Amino acid sequence: MNTNLTQDDDSIEFQKAVTSPYKCPQHLLIINDSLFLLSIREYEEPEETFLIVSEIQQDIQIVISSKFVKRIRYTITNPYNIELMISSLKRAQQFKDDNLQQVHQYMIENQTSIQIYSSYANQCNYLQERIQNESRILQNEIKLRSYLYNVLEGLKYIHENNCVHMCITLQNIECHKEEYRQLKISRFETLSEIKTKLNPDLRKYLIKTLPHIPPELGDSNYIIQPSFDIYCLGVVLFQICTCQLPEDNQRTNRLILKKFISKELANMIILMLDLKAENRPTAITLIDNQWFNI
Figure 1 (spheres, rainbow, N blue to C red):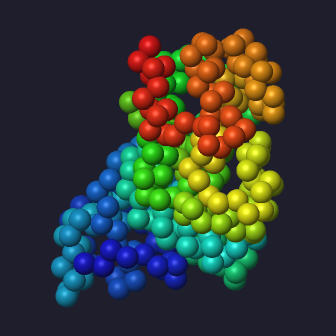
Figure 2 (figure 1 turned 180 degrees about the vertical axis):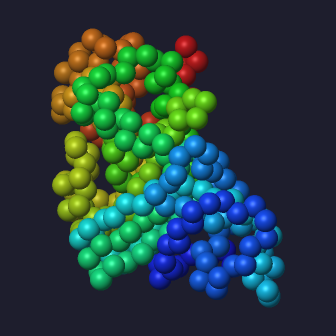
């Protein structure tokens, strides 16, 4: 069975689901991914639909069973480093975790832009719209526990696979709402390997992209560590709870947080925002924090 997607494949749009055996064209994108079936189209016509097959008889090109799914396409113009970005996306394609958006395909266009297709999130801009556009803080700590747990489980998976996301921001945490709202980490073009030296092109990109820069980004010889993601997530949590960015002064940050949230959650965020990377907790220790059991 052909289950590989390449950057040269063209996307295919279909108008309706096929439930019976179907003649399969030679150039069809064939995906064998059971997890992605969760985003099957139900009520609305998607902009992009792709065929998923669970079995194919390759010699006569007959699809035995199929379903159609919805997927997001986004474009990165003027990539900071084509080779580095492609390497990151290839690695991300191997990730299989429910707390991460699945990268399915990418295509290079004239070395000036990359189109990336990832699994569908029906409220993908939820956090960005709520915090940045509507200035609505989130103080409900029951919801915060659920949201933070999703993201921490995703980071734990990434870090256990010897990688660091490097760009955890409001925009890069997407939302899918079915019976409940689940947050998923997305946008893996900055994915980097742990204990490697930070690429200068990526460093310049992150300085322009991150809303609040981790102190270690000022070190041109910085060796990549998971603590980078923890700091960035601390910034995201601070934004969610206060609708503002943290200061470089921990005492000021603590005073601001205590106006909005419990002491326990404020303490956890302060730990994540520690200016010394070695003092920050890991994703695993954060998941075990007593705040999740209150």
